[in-house]
Image (cartoon, rainbow, N blue to C red; front, side, top):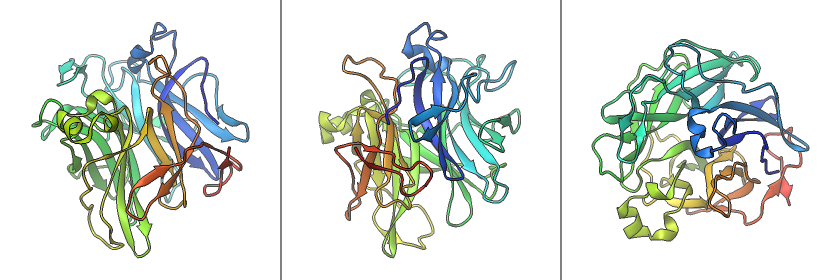
Amino acid sequence: MPWFPLDQYIWDFWFAWWAEELHLFYLQASPADCDYNPERRHNCSAVGHARLTAWGWQEVSREGPVFARSEGDRWDNLSIWTGSIIEHPVTGVYYLFYTGRRWDDALVWTAHELQRSQNIGLATSPNLTHWQRYRDTPILPNPGTPFEGVAWRDPYVIQGEDGLFYAFISTRLKESAFDAGGAIAYQVSDTLEAWPNPPKILVASEEFYQMEVPQVFWRRFGNQKRLYLLFCLQQGDCSQQRYHQQGEANCQTGTYYLYSDLVPLDYPDFPLCKSPAKLLASGLYAGKLLNPETAETPLFFAFHWSNAAGQFANGLCDPLQCEFKEDGTLVLSPSPVKVRNCRTRHRCFRHL
């Protein structure tokens, strides 16, 4: 069930359920718009949409992206970056939180590159197909200090067991070493339409320059639970401290994770995660687990960062099973699995 579209570059992705049918949303860019250079895809990106069928992933529409940049002098008129989708628990409306940038914003030197400031917007849909912007300004604007004021992207929005909504965001701390300071912030709200509470820091790392595309979840172990954080980064995002302490084998482009000690089920806050971070999948980027809170061995999806020649690989990998060990560590199956029944959230695979 790998997917390698012939007419689009694709990369970061996120999931949504329509009843029992799994849908995939992903960043895409036309090779022609990028002058057939995948390194230029970030300024040409929009959101594509596919669904899982018995024959694998199938695009929902061939007429173009399902969601794209704004026209005119808007805050998101450059390109759309990574987001996430949550279904409203009462109305059933789907909420797409997405990253956007503005053409006319000045390029800012960060420790690694020139970037424009990023903000997070909101669009809604009754059916996962037709999306309408909720308003013409960001729903989660870049807050600046104590963050660097540039990185504010890749929202991952969930509803907690307490009924509140949590938005986890990839960012960087302003006061940090040039090769460190990657952070995951979060904001909390009792509604999806307004986020008045200031951001807090879930994780701030001395190991990495950045921590991209987060996924945060609790996993129960009997009458206790652990907090998990998945994220991804490039090899060059590992700090000198990380290289010195963990070695090159643990400083690879790919998907990483952090996890906490066991805490009671009614633990009222986010516990500290153990350090150092562990490498889960080398060469597989933006990795996500499907139903990690409830599936016994959830499926792990990611996109291939590069091919054997070191070029952008442009394709979603076959899913792998993920096993949760008693000590909290994660182990991926050595062999991929194949979808058997795509119309169930809980039992949808078999071994290849």
